[in-house]
Length: 228
Image (tube, rainbow, N blue to C red):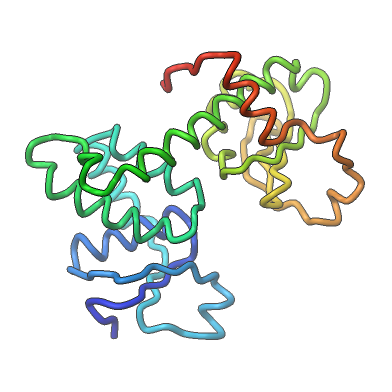
């Protein structure tokens, strides 16, 4: 039986985090800490406060937050993808602040302790835009079927729609070397695929598409686009 407070565990996915928010919203739990616990770890070390991902509950929270305030939901999602240490508990307090203010249809006030969340969301969006611009400027995927990136943040989920729309008639693969997974478009289907470390061993640094210093250089030269 789950306690109402204490340390809560989830699988590390955004859907898992939304499921945890569902517990907060509908079951009145109050996490003091939120820890990622993969499925294998959960099986080996069962935790009474482990929240298994439930897609229907995650979808309910997503749709509800989207209808309340899309801008705040975007901030929450982008900040989550920063993967900053202890980001989950920070986002929990951001969510609580949001819900307290939603009656006025306002975005959570940056003065209430949410400034770091907004900062992280902005940094993630900037890196997302930099990757999109760099790939397009390099004539991807015409010059190469596979591109390797080393982003600081987990931006592959954010660039999927852009490249699926722009290159819907091509086959391509964008690999995130830092996280050992890729975004693959093949025969009209888009999927995230696991990339084993040994598959990347032959890729030297000069083959990498872009790294953090290059992101900064690109941001200085070009203005950001508005997110659709």
